[in-house]
Length: 596
Image 1 (cartoon, rainbow, N blue to C red):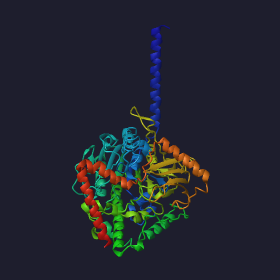
Image 2: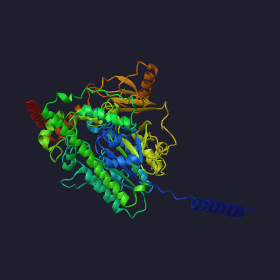
Image 3: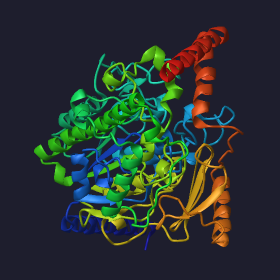
Image 4: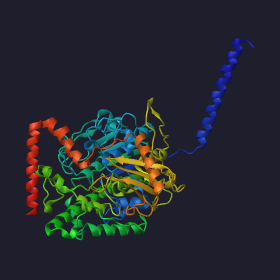
């Protein structure tokens, strides 16, 4: 055969092959039913304890979230980081916070950590968000509320996969006045809309506003056929704890018996709901005061603090209900997956520590607490009740700091109203959502750039009832934040907490029988204790975890960073010294007046 004949034959052969493949693909596509991808709504509460939600044993009225729990699956052994920014970074990327750039909350980061690998304090360039991957696959993507994973231009939602966005870039702000700071650690509150500085209303109520904006996004695009991904980051119940009066009034007198009684009531309810074993025991935290030793005046004030806290949670649930009802009205509810979680355990800081700032910016009068211009903070006593039946709260690595309520509701859940006890983690959310949306995981590269591999596991096998665990019994799961650390392996937990809620030493607990961490097993099973310490050392090395300085505490470091990174640069050393001296006088005066 001549060369020209061979060329023609080859061309005809290849053309027929392509046509054949195309025909085969077309026939296959025609015979396959189209995949209906679900809408996805992720709801993130701020600083809720394990049993604050009604479906998790709480007395607070949360009917809308409870209804989602009844329709879905509750995760009783779900873990996050012990503060907001690290958790949100893992939620959005599926990557451990030490690898995604948020090794610690920027405000609480020791000075010599900032800028080190893994300690940027915001998302680095080596991760891609679940929103970006969903957007690439055709999802409409929206976010409203607290962002807190970086305010650099490349880190704002419009560059991280969201079509439309209205976000607060910081750790928090006032819930009635969006421009008002809750702590003096930044020059202003930073709000962004679609990547640009946002023009905010003079007043709002945060939970209502975030849902209003999200409803606006969904309604505006309602004629589009693509599914949507909606991420709502609430400020409830971050300090300052504030709520509409109509919600506060519902709880008048509810907390008269105090936090110890409430802890016991919630333990009993959590056991009855099957969330924790009947063998669960409580331990009293060193920071929990004696309710009966308080003066009548102080008891009334602390009752009011918890009344406002409960009202703020119920108000958030009310606005979640508005979102759910709109989806029902528009026929979108049945094809919507809901994920609800809290970003960390309850806030347990002592409200006396905030007195200098409160004196200048806020009131704490018992009668008006919760209203505009007031600053509610539940304190360590109520935080211990919110965490019940667990130990510690926000910032610490006891279960009360890092085990939070989580539920998934919607089409993937094969059998509704189930409690799942498998060890799960916030990094599991991204791979779960990707699998639900039929979007492949990105691997080690994205748009030609190297990225971190996902560290989480898809929870779809649990939702569909095809598995009872997503991690092997011998597979370790490490964690560290602010020197407080943990390693999970099967039902065992190795944990180290710094003062005042810990002694800086390693302890070992069996969470399947003792989620309250009351019985230390390190001497009973020394081999497991030692091997888990070795596993943690590997985790620490692989993730470049840095040791915290001697005497470090997150709360103290926030104060130090506020002075060094804000007050001195803005006002100068002399002015900052004068202001601090005034603060000291105010603290002395306020404490003296309270003791009088």
